[in-house]
Length: 274
Image (tube, rainbow, N blue to C red; front, top):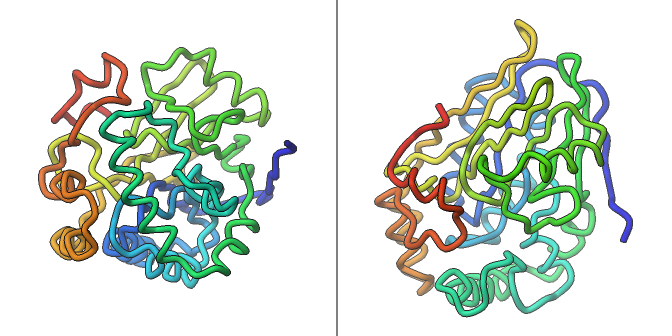
């Protein structure tokens, strides 16, 4: 299937990068406030996908995102909802805890989004490219070839290089894995801003995004996103969504580490990417 790639041309000024909104309206609202306070316009804000996910306000979150006007690529969740599939397409191991929980939150999201949502998802690209501070940038969800591929800092660089080569990029901005990180090999960078809808298994309630700045060349920095997590938890409880994920919003620690490679499992409760 041919990839739909949108090129934004030359971008300048601060840019806000983020992923995994996960139906967390409170986190998205805080992120929009951060963008406004830092003077970053919506056209300089890019989501790596999975606007919809674990939390309790899928329609309200999507409506807010669309009204804001930021860019987004397709995450695996948007693809599955667009195509009217019965599961989230997250590539969880069959029968795992994540797989079982996903049946609950995905069914809830699917049942609580209007039918015209598919039209919006059909408008989203698989990838975004743009030029920034003399570098060619490419945006993927998991990887170029596999939207649901879990790519971590410990993932072999050859797998990352494949996405860089496919988009002819100097820098890849990626999502999906839920952990923020920076990986560099010579002049090439793989940046994962993190996700804003769930903590990063680092023991903190704040979630993570990233700001690019071209004022002095090419600079990038992870930033914490604080939000009203108690309301997000109440919304999950109200709709009988997995309380294990609601607890993660409170503790900053994942319910399980099934998807993590050994290196990333050792980082539980730590912030090592700053």
